[in-house]
Length: 509
Image 1 (cartoon, one colour):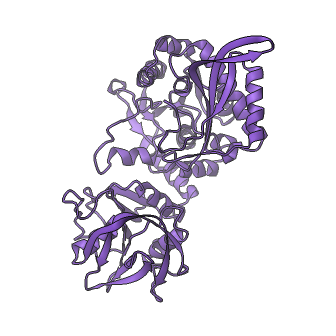
Image 2 (tube, one colour; image 1 turned 30 degrees about the vertical axis):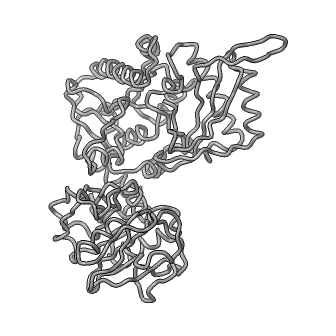
Image 3 (cartoon, rainbow, N blue to C red; image 1 turned 180 degrees about the vertical axis):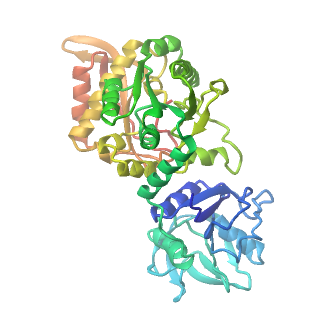
């Protein structure tokens, strides 16, 4: 793997976004915790220091060892990274009178600054810090300012070392991508060779070499990640890939049959297993969301292990792990305290005694889609909205019954089809319906009814970490509501969720 750019993570919520912006420039990069710097740095051509929730003035703040980096590689410090270098090499960092957070505009750019080439002097930038660099060390020079922050950016004289107190990776910084391009392409001369086609070619060749004639089993979910992983493996090892698609009874309406049909048209060796009754029996009477997740995860293990056991001489288990999962497992503060217990395959136990192969472990979600397009996977499949691992179990608040599953499947089918009919589906990142555990009074004809309430949810996002509710047209919502109430027996009220993440989450459980 080409290791062009190293991003040292100090715990910022934006670190993954820096990496995604770098990848958008067709430049490969890797994120490593500041306290786990790779021993061999020769393959890296530039290094970026991320932001951090810590203040550099805090005794508990990260203290990276830059002795093998500063002055030896092109180096860009972002926010905390910039403040750390200024503070550590003789400057003054102090708490601001007011926290500098949000949009700001540059009002000075040093005329010959290579970092700010092709960037307007009044360009908008995004600030997010409570400290500020009050004085620069002697060999540092200011190269950009805003009205409120004099030392918004600096360069160390005689080095390709830069610091910026704003975040170029967020879209609020209008010329952030240009700044990163200036640093990586023009200053550090990093080659722009990271493309979906190159990744696919490299990965297929690597899989052929690693796996050889061994057999691989993969649990398909119908989602983008497992589908792209299966396609890469199929092109590498052909018939030696065995895919298992388990119907847990909590999929969308007719999804089991339609996804199986899609996979067969792709030439994949897929076995469909309808275990609906097994899952629903296990879930009977259970209302707690985390218990539901664990039951579904354990039931999947039971079914998958049983089916995989019927395939002789399997050596590898393939997983659709993507890069955010990898980053989280080696985060600055150690593995995440709360790990979801419903990965389709990720929770398989040691007794299966299989080696793990993860073709997508270095890709972000948007990159997975681009690789899938390069592999010729149908655009409709690649454009599918994310769907939770536990399926409709966490969109039915309370206990699960066959009747509740039927109701929410019917409601969901009306909602999703309407989004397609109104050309809104691709403008929404994720949409679904939630069955609420309450009965609502209604009137149908001359009769009073007590029936279920459903909530519709549609959000726009890039990675699911943050999300805004989508302002769907009133006429659309009116049409969908009328259709649901008239066609779905058991529902007499429809509401629309206008909560954003944060503070709410995308799913209700």
